[in-house]
Image (cartoon, rainbow over all chains, first blue to last red; front, side):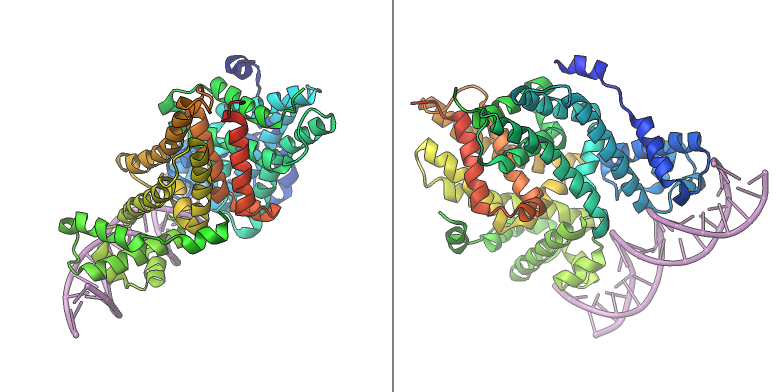
Length: 228
Length: 228
DNA sequence: GTCTATACATAGATAGAC
DNA sequence: GTCTATCTATGTATAGAC
């Protein structure tokens, strides 16, 4: 699958996920109009990841966020109680968004070898569709209070586990090596992250997203595949 | 070489590098006493990377930096003209520090295969000796004005090139594959970075620095080495 | 060169009209 | 629910004595 096919095919379930978030937290939140809530939380999150990508979350002022999202200062504080709460909401929505998209794509395949390829390619392609979310997820965890870092940490581990599970399946089928599964899973995650963390470098080197995905797949396969 | 041997053996040439920095910029700077300058710029930089690691550069206040470094607010501004200038100085010192240490170690080896192993291991071990500097280098580039990002970007490219050169040498000798050299160089860099960017994860998984270095080496070798 | 005291700007957050 | 005006804290940076 090429990236163009992928991007035409993929549908971001962000509204659905934001609605779910709202319903789960309705009692804690001031806004009671669901449609308005969904619309404006999405706007707040999209604006936050956009501005944070450019200048970092701490450097982004509430006034800038207000302007970008189209909500006034007063309205904004009707939706969130503090700037820090925005980080939490973005992490919450982002985690479910990414999880949802990844699982949908990968579950279609059965064969471990093919599944590994699909998982790597999908993850990289997905980070190309919503780069700001992935970037935010990685860079803005330190802005959270220590107790709130558990969510993004678990999220990181979750993606790693996605790869580890595929590697385990393949090793049980006798086609992948059985040692160093945890290391390999983590290294795939690191290579995927490199794509969205150092995008400027890939632009500079004129590397396309497809080319990079192919490279990561071949690098990992040369290591894990057992000779027939 | 084990990490313990490495850490006993390595000597940080930070004073020497700071002195060189001071001499090159003497005319631009207020302080005229060289010994004092070297001592306090080192203190400022070490305190900056330490605090930035904990809470991020933007969240670190000048008052905190003043306390940590032992300089008063007034004294501090005698050394730097603004908070942003500190980022620039840390990047400047850090780049030469890392370059110096890496080159010293790697130049001792001749053979490309051995050189690749030494380069990867040294880089990972080094990031374990001065983790805060590496972390700062990666995370705090966005705090720079766009025109000042050129220095850290070139620095990133420089390390990548270190690996690319070794891969090129090996491919000319017919022991490494000749395609995808640029990709491989960048991926080594990414895997090294993963060590100091997601340290908490390796602690969680109980992975030692030696074990990780060995893994990265074997992963890369399985891909680049041509069968004999 | 270093200190303390302070100026000045900007940020996050709130009040209260609509 | 949303707006504008405003409060208050904090942060960077400077002044001027020593």
